[in-house]
Each structure stands twice: as C-alpha cells, then as structure tokens.
Image (cartoon, rainbow, N blue to C red; front, side, top):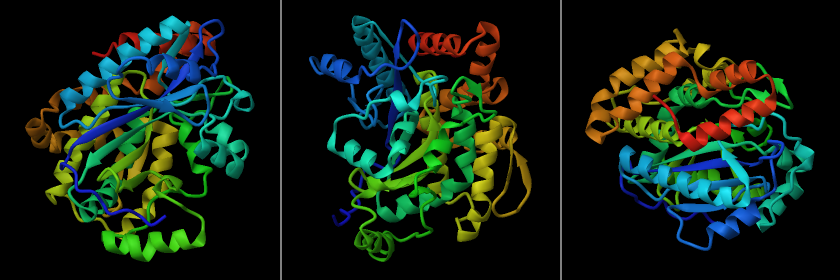
Length: 375
C-alpha cells in the first residue's frame, strides 16, 4: 500500500516498546503462555498497551506517548507491576534480557496473528530463531525531513545504545563471547541494517519507497528491519538496536538519553550527516555487539579510534544542558553508572559464575525485573 503522510507529532515526545520473556518457573525455560497472559491482562485496563509477539513465549508492552523521562519511567514501573501481578496468578515469570540462555528455537510456537504466520511462511526457521528480545524507542518529529535528519545523525551513536543495553551474551547454554548476540539474529533478515541515505521525505517516499513497493518486496514500513526506521503513522523515528534491559529503569534511561541526544542533534550542534559516515558503520556496530563497553569505534568523520566507554561518557557530558532542560539528568546518571560498572551482559556473566548454570542466570533476570534494583 502507498506510504501514508508523515504525521506531525510533538517534537521530542517519547515512547518505549519492550519485548519480554515468559518463563516456566519449574525449569526456567521459555513457556508459550502469551495467549493466557494476554487474556488475563485484557480483563481490566492496562497502563499502556500489550500485544503478542512473533512466538508465544514473548509479549510486547508499549507505553503511551510521553513527554518526559520521569513520566515514562513512572508508566513503565506501573506496567511492570501489572505484568508481575498477572504472571503470578498464572505461575509464570517475566524478565528482560536480549536472549534466553538455553531455549531451543525449534520448540517455539509462532503466534496465530496473520502477519506472524506470513512472516513464518516467508522466512522459515528464521522466524522461530527470532525469539529474541529488544527495546524500541520512539522519538516524535515535526516533519519527515526532521525525522530523516535525526535518523542519519544518530548513526554515529548507534554503538552507544548497543553497548549500554547489551544483555544477550548466552545462547544454547554457551557464552557467545558477544555482549549483544541478539543482533546477529536480526542481521539474518534481508531488509535489516541501515536505512538508505536520503534526507528529504518526499525523495524517500517517491524515489525509494514507491520503487521498493513496486518490486513486491515490501508492503509497509514493518517489512524493514532497519536499526532505525521512520514510522510515519506515528510521526516518529524508531530506534531498534537495543536489547531489552533487565530493569525498566534502565529501559527508561536509554529513552531519556535518546531524547536528550535528539534535542542536541536537532539544534545542529553536531556535524550534518553524510553518506560517507556509513563507511565505518558496520565495523562500529560489530565492535559494540562483540565487545560492548570495552570495544572501540572509528569516528565517521575524523577517523579517530575511540573507546566506546569514553565516547559515551564524553557524549553524556556534552548533552547535559539538553538533559537538564528536559528533566532527564537522572537518566544520564544511571547511564554513567552503567558505563563504569558494566552492562547487563556483564551482570549475567557474573551470575553464571556465581550460580553455576544457565538456569541460575534466568533466576537472576527474573529477580532483577521484579525488584528493579539499580543504584
């Protein structure tokens, strides 16, 4: 279908989507319980939105449109409380984390929605292997041109979000040596990766999307699995590279960081993006997935080698005025703590050493989600 016009939304409004794991408490494996949980949650008002995901051992929750980090965090905490109460009634667990450490993809059940059945028919086993869990962050834009400017300006900061959110070091009971192994599953899809370098919304619609639609490859923006994609029906850009953190507090902090960074970028205080910025994009993204905060990246314009951790800390310092004006300083403080203390991937590896099994990792993730304990 033709791409709808880009809806003008409140500038820098924010929203978060989280894909969450449903866990059988008897063995800590995933459980295909989303139909029962969704039925129970549908019996009373839900603070936000909740819907099925591609397999029945997952759900996706979404906040309403928010304007501040504090209101976003408040609603995420309310959603978490509602989910935990409902899950307790069904004797199942809910947790974050980008991958489950020992689930078998072949045992997963595709959700019964028409779109997911279509995706499964097209992509075969990749659909079940897509039982991975990510955080999406939406930022409101006044126009499609502003959205595309932000989308491409953010390319330089993609490693930050990957490294800070990384929570998927284990797959099939093995340490993958990646901090974010989840993104390797996303990269398997043919329409993943980066968006084409176009800064005009009219050009994007007429010179790119309409041609892609005529090929029959895509029917809507949902068919693109880009790291960042425009969502014209919402009037937002959507960041898709983050693993689901272990706590909603960290999820809110990542959204607060993105909101503050977008304010900084819209005020043109960074160099304008160019196509050449993408020369180092895949390398930088790999470094963040593989090594997390310990990785190094190449600056896309100066070609200087940078520590991801130090680059994050320098960026947090330079956007402090923006965070201050938006009321997001607490988000930046939490991200500073993570930069020094380590990501959720670091925490999960530590739990494996202390508890001695992948099942122990899941126990730790379940407890972390329920208690939301972060300094």
